[in-house]
Length: 201
Image (cartoon, rainbow, N blue to C red):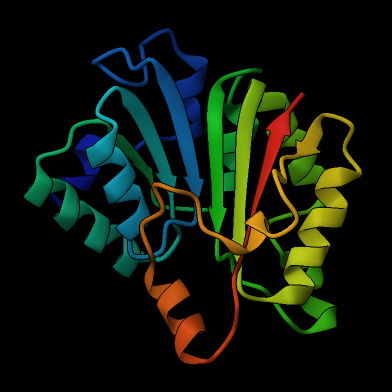
């Protein structure tokens, strides 16, 4: 945390400057909101060295695990925001990202806490702004209520289209999916996950 994080940390102020976010000039930039223990982000970054990844996570344990994984795999295509994703997203310019992941976000199940959910009408509007045309927003959760909540708010936005190729594919993970500890926890509890893909139109 003392040595590696300062080298990889990214702040909203960097988007206002002229310096490139990534030194290697990636072909695309992808964002993961709330990467948890970093399992999915590490797998994606290792498989796609041509892509620049930004991961946001407010919890220090998750950030430390990701940093350890990055050093072990010697990956240089990841930047980290150790905090809430909202401020970082607001600072991004239009059409900045090609893909956004929101995987197993905190469901805030109590009705009075629903407003704390990361997927809100305001967040969807911001994601539509920063995603390129034909860019993807991927959402996964094992909480049916949250899936319905997210589906309704995202489809209310004219900028997004739900990419459901067939009637059951939202029950199947993406081909390159790397399971996370949250998915494993859901499976142990007997809950089924949903995997939703939306395209920026």
